Image (tube, rainbow, N blue to C red):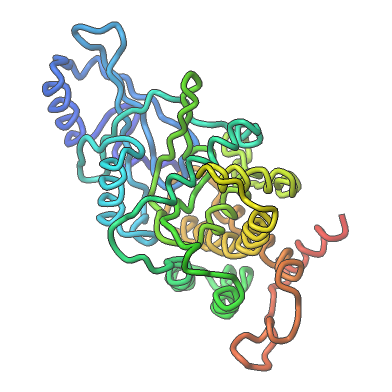
Length: 372
């Protein structure tokens, strides 16, 4: 798959970006010579292309560093970029994440945070996991402008329509996209959405979007493209699913669901989240949120499955989006009977007698998994 970087080719930056960097360097008194720019591509991003750009300064031994985010192809199909920028600026003013330093046609320049991005292994470290949980509680407590309505279901329906419009007939059939509108309605009906459990969620709590200062143990959550109000259980579900991923291997599109966090890990994370307020939660409170989170993994599989299908058609970042989508849809159909049961009222949420048809390809995959 070809790599598209919206103008960054062999370290050569778009003219508009170079002008912005010169302006920033002048503002900071650096006296930048463009020939001294160092461009380092940061791997692991799947929506945008991300670069660390550095240059020497006049009075410091430490080079100046900024983060440059080149917007991925077709991202407007997933979210409104203007709204995402407003969210970014609002969170920055609230002391969350990096500062916005400037914008150009195909991207923006952000403050470079002097902390390390987590690895896949870090998510399984009990101390780091507890720090993430506490930071997520702080994030959920933010009062953000705009609608406080749950965005999950509308976004799923929007993405389903996008996927249907892009897909070949073969992929439409393989992923059973014609049936997913019923599945979305089923989940919306069955999954709990108590108003007091709705908060501003990150919705993409993978390890690459979390940073830590190893000295102070301060955790920073970054990259809010998919942020919005949702049930907090959905953010937990997403994070637990992401604990099966490693985007820095030769097969970054493969999620290893056999490493999904065991009950004890999930309970520990939820307990750390709830207790970060200073009050000790009851066993019942922990169990309730753990159970709800498990059910929301179904919505998460559909969410990222549709994301993968759309991305395969519109984004040229080197990542096997279609195979990733297959894995997520497979998990949806595999876990749905376990988490929701298989009664007739669940299969026919619209009241019809028409059964839900799963494509032969997905059915074969599920059968193989069950018999392994």
